[in-house]
Image (cartoon, rainbow, N blue to C red; front, side, top):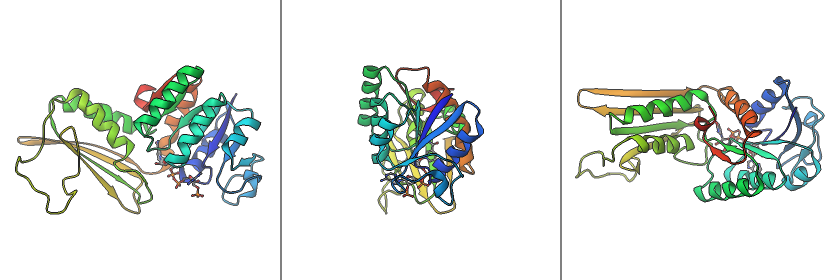
Length: 263
Ligand code: NAP
């Protein structure tokens, strides 16, 4: 039985993760970390399921008092990093959906994982379809070096470009021959019009209410374009990947970054 703590239970991802844990026979929710509602039970929160599960504001207190195997972390980058590190220090294996961790933070967590011999999975996108989009884009980039990534998210998202867009660009870079795109003399009338430059390709971040998580990777070549597109219509799309990660994280003693390395 996997004993699970969820950080961010009132959030859109966190509340979906509670449903996931409830629906699985081999998972049990043992506590939640929430910056509000310290000392209450989930059952005391109107919008959450009627469960006798304690809520902690202080992650350290939670990790010290609760017997758990896995932390599912779904908050914000700064807090999420602290939760992840503290969980590993307490022998609890993190499955991190929170996006926006820096490379230095991931390096630090990797060091901690090898030091403590404990697993951790961090994935900027737990939707299996999104991982396939990245893999297909990596294949296409071998033949089409001109590529723009357009990612679109709801306007509450804090980081840009999205972790998925960055990961896609990194994977494309592995198979694409470097090319500085666009006209050599092009000028931006408004700064940022051409998007972020990553290894000569362009990344554009759209933020609008009504969106969830969407990405198009457009390859251009004389006489043809190829578009690889993925849409997460709601947050249920991320749960199958989180479920896979909770199995995998129990088997490893390192940090795995990206769901593509779990599948
Ligand atoms: P959300 O609905 O805004 O939920 C965020 C949660 O974090 C809320 O419960 C919020 O509590 C809590 N929070 C905010 N600031 C906090 C702080 N300082 N300390 C502790 N908790 C804090 O966002 P969401 O859509 O669920 O997304 C959560 C995270 O998952 C984000 O990082 C997002 O980018 C990421 N995400 C990942 C994937 C993936 O597949 N990996 C997919 C979608 C989203 P309050 O209500 O009190 O603010």
